[in-house]
Image 1 (cartoon, helix red, strand yellow):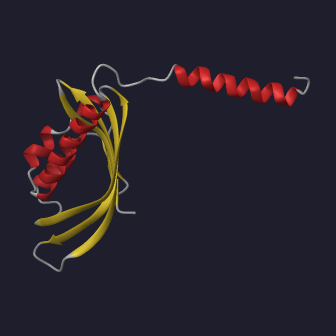
Image 2 (cartoon, one colour; image 1 turned 90 degrees about the vertical axis):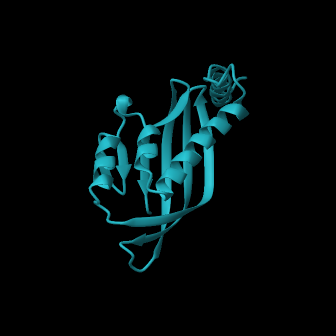
Image 3 (cartoon, helix red, strand yellow; image 1 turned 180 degrees about the horizontal axis):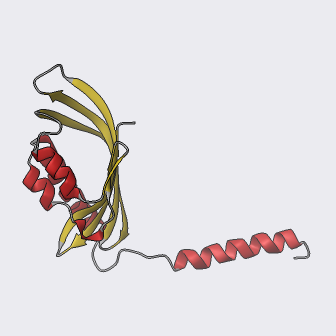
Amino acid sequence: MQNPLIKLLFGILFFGFINASNAQTASGVSNVGLVKEVDSAFSIMVNAAVNNDIATLARGVDDSQKAGFIINGVYYTLFSDIIDNMKTGGQGDVKQLLTLQNKKITLLTDNLALLTANGVAHVTVNGGNPFDADFFWTLVLKKINNQWKVIQSHQSRK
Protein backbone atom coordinates (compact mmCIF):
# COMPACT_ATOMS: atom_id res chain seq x y z
CA MET A 1 0.00 0.00 0.00
CA GLN A 2 2.38 2.63 -1.19
CA ASN A 3 -0.24 5.04 -2.52
CA PRO A 4 -1.60 7.42 0.19
CA LEU A 5 -4.97 7.55 -1.60
CA ILE A 6 -5.37 3.78 -1.32
CA LYS A 7 -4.48 3.95 2.38
CA LEU A 8 -7.06 6.70 2.90
CA LEU A 9 -9.80 4.77 1.08
CA PHE A 10 -8.97 1.63 3.04
CA GLY A 11 -9.14 3.62 6.30
CA ILE A 12 -12.53 5.11 5.40
CA LEU A 13 -13.89 1.69 4.45
CA PHE A 14 -12.58 0.12 7.68
CA PHE A 15 -14.00 2.99 9.79
CA GLY A 16 -17.39 2.52 8.09
CA PHE A 17 -17.48 -1.17 9.02
CA ILE A 18 -16.65 -0.41 12.65
CA ASN A 19 -19.33 2.28 12.93
CA ALA A 20 -21.94 0.09 11.24
CA SER A 21 -21.37 -2.56 13.89
CA ASN A 22 -22.03 0.02 16.65
CA ALA A 23 -25.42 1.17 15.28
CA GLN A 24 -28.52 0.89 17.48
CA THR A 25 -30.84 -1.97 16.73
CA ALA A 26 -34.31 -2.91 17.86
CA SER A 27 -33.73 -5.80 20.23
CA GLY A 28 -35.63 -8.14 22.46
CA VAL A 29 -38.83 -8.17 20.45
CA SER A 30 -39.35 -9.25 16.88
CA ASN A 31 -38.86 -6.36 14.45
CA VAL A 32 -41.83 -7.69 12.50
CA GLY A 33 -43.93 -7.57 15.66
CA LEU A 34 -42.89 -3.99 16.42
CA VAL A 35 -43.64 -2.88 12.86
CA LYS A 36 -47.11 -4.44 13.16
CA GLU A 37 -47.67 -2.58 16.44
CA VAL A 38 -46.68 0.74 14.85
CA ASP A 39 -48.82 0.02 11.80
CA SER A 40 -51.81 -0.78 14.02
CA ALA A 41 -51.43 2.47 15.97
CA PHE A 42 -51.15 4.39 12.70
CA SER A 43 -54.28 2.72 11.29
CA ILE A 44 -56.24 3.71 14.39
CA MET A 45 -55.11 7.33 13.92
CA VAL A 46 -56.04 7.34 10.21
CA ASN A 47 -59.50 5.94 10.98
CA ALA A 48 -59.94 8.54 13.71
CA ALA A 49 -59.03 11.31 11.26
CA VAL A 50 -61.52 10.00 8.67
CA ASN A 51 -64.26 9.82 11.31
CA ASN A 52 -63.37 13.19 12.91
CA ASP A 53 -62.87 11.28 16.18
CA ILE A 54 -60.99 13.97 18.07
CA ALA A 55 -60.78 11.99 21.33
CA THR A 56 -59.04 9.04 19.64
CA LEU A 57 -56.67 11.37 17.82
CA ALA A 58 -55.75 13.05 21.10
CA ARG A 59 -55.13 9.68 22.82
CA GLY A 60 -52.75 8.70 20.01
CA VAL A 61 -50.41 11.64 20.66
CA ASP A 62 -48.00 12.46 23.48
CA ASP A 63 -47.01 16.12 23.85
CA SER A 64 -44.58 15.55 26.71
CA GLN A 65 -41.58 15.38 24.34
CA LYS A 66 -42.31 18.96 23.19
CA ALA A 67 -41.17 18.06 19.67
CA GLY A 68 -43.91 20.02 17.91
CA PHE A 69 -46.18 19.44 14.96
CA ILE A 70 -46.10 21.05 11.51
CA ILE A 71 -49.16 21.18 9.29
CA ASN A 72 -48.74 22.80 5.87
CA GLY A 73 -45.97 25.06 7.09
CA VAL A 74 -47.65 26.08 10.36
CA TYR A 75 -45.81 25.04 13.53
CA TYR A 76 -47.77 24.00 16.62
CA THR A 77 -45.90 23.50 19.88
CA LEU A 78 -48.64 21.27 21.28
CA PHE A 79 -51.03 18.87 19.60
CA SER A 80 -53.71 20.18 21.95
CA ASP A 81 -53.60 23.46 19.98
CA ILE A 82 -54.52 21.52 16.82
CA ILE A 83 -57.30 19.72 18.69
CA ASP A 84 -58.66 23.05 20.01
CA ASN A 85 -58.73 24.37 16.44
CA MET A 86 -60.63 21.27 15.28
CA LYS A 87 -63.13 21.55 18.15
CA THR A 88 -63.90 25.20 17.44
CA GLY A 89 -64.60 24.39 13.80
CA GLY A 90 -61.55 26.11 12.41
CA GLN A 91 -61.92 24.03 9.27
CA GLY A 92 -65.72 23.82 9.19
CA ASP A 93 -67.60 20.57 8.72
CA VAL A 94 -64.95 18.38 7.08
CA LYS A 95 -65.62 14.98 5.60
CA GLN A 96 -62.64 13.12 4.21
CA LEU A 97 -61.57 9.80 2.83
CA LEU A 98 -57.85 9.07 2.91
CA THR A 99 -56.28 6.80 0.32
CA LEU A 100 -52.74 5.77 1.24
CA GLN A 101 -50.46 5.19 -1.72
CA ASN A 102 -47.16 4.54 0.05
CA LYS A 103 -46.20 3.86 3.64
CA LYS A 104 -42.85 2.98 5.20
CA ILE A 105 -42.12 2.20 8.83
CA THR A 106 -38.52 2.36 10.00
CA LEU A 107 -37.66 1.18 13.51
CA LEU A 108 -35.04 3.42 15.05
CA THR A 109 -34.94 1.49 18.36
CA ASP A 110 -37.33 -0.93 20.04
CA ASN A 111 -39.40 2.02 21.31
CA LEU A 112 -38.94 4.65 18.57
CA ALA A 113 -40.14 4.53 14.97
CA LEU A 114 -40.30 6.76 11.91
CA LEU A 115 -43.32 6.44 9.63
CA THR A 116 -43.59 8.14 6.26
CA ALA A 117 -46.70 7.99 4.11
CA ASN A 118 -48.34 9.73 1.23
CA GLY A 119 -51.63 9.53 -0.55
CA VAL A 120 -54.73 11.40 -1.63
CA ALA A 121 -57.34 12.99 0.61
CA HIS A 122 -60.83 13.18 -0.89
CA VAL A 123 -62.29 16.14 1.01
CA THR A 124 -65.64 17.91 1.29
CA VAL A 125 -65.88 21.04 3.47
CA ASN A 126 -69.25 22.37 4.66
CA GLY A 127 -71.13 20.19 2.13
CA GLY A 128 -69.52 22.04 -0.80
CA ASN A 129 -67.87 20.67 -3.89
CA PRO A 130 -65.50 17.82 -3.11
CA PHE A 131 -61.83 18.08 -4.01
CA ASP A 132 -58.75 15.89 -3.88
CA ALA A 133 -55.47 16.89 -2.26
CA ASP A 134 -52.20 15.00 -2.21
CA PHE A 135 -50.71 14.63 1.27
CA PHE A 136 -47.34 13.69 2.68
CA TRP A 137 -46.78 12.67 6.30
CA THR A 138 -43.74 12.07 8.45
CA LEU A 139 -44.48 10.82 11.97
CA VAL A 140 -42.17 9.98 14.83
CA LEU A 141 -43.77 7.47 17.19
CA LYS A 142 -42.56 6.44 20.61
CA LYS A 143 -43.70 3.50 22.72
CA ILE A 144 -44.90 5.03 25.98
CA ASN A 145 -46.55 2.88 28.68
CA ASN A 146 -46.71 0.01 26.16
CA GLN A 147 -48.59 2.10 23.56
CA TRP A 148 -47.24 3.72 20.40
CA LYS A 149 -47.84 7.48 20.44
CA VAL A 150 -47.08 10.18 17.88
CA ILE A 151 -44.54 12.54 19.45
CA GLN A 152 -43.79 14.65 16.36
CA SER A 153 -45.32 15.04 12.94
CA HIS A 154 -44.95 16.93 9.71
CA GLN A 155 -47.85 17.05 7.28
CA SER A 156 -47.98 18.82 3.96
CA ARG A 157 -49.92 18.91 0.73
CA LYS A 158 -46.92 19.39 -1.52
